[in-house]
Length: 223
Image 1 (spheres, rainbow, N blue to C red):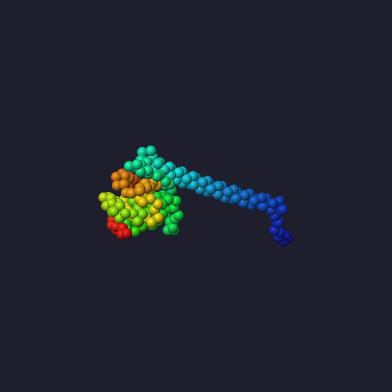
Image 2: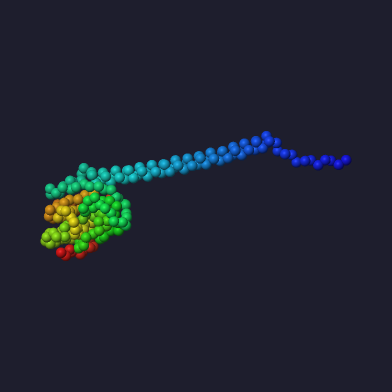
């Protein structure tokens, strides 16, 4: 007698429900794992941001201390040294910048610099600021200043091998301005003794003080 062929069994409704629940549990575990990974990524990003902010804050505090330390003089020969903003360290731009002071002594600046020494033409503000960041001291003057005064300025610059420059500056409100990163000293006429003291104190002491600025430029101003 022939055996009856077994018919395939249908999965019971309860078995299908169990399978569905298992799939749901697996999916929920997968989502939990993804959420945990995302939370870990966000936590790591927050830690990196905090570290970066702390480093920036420490650097800013050191820079501020350096330029406002009590040991730095506030005048030379009775000429006041104005302490101004020191923002913009390492911030480069190819665009023209609107500065708060004339001449500018800090802020976003050009990527390049000019040689130190005697300049017969005005130096672009954005370039000058980068020179000051490298520790240069600038001596700038009104173009209609007495030629004898200009000659004394250029002779003074010639006494130094590096980190000092002179240049005319159209629109300057004071006849002569001596500047370094974050500081200026305004003069009604060149005060050679005070200017030498200023150079001795601040030349080579910008935020990027290890950068060279040799006095190789020799282009006297011609009225």
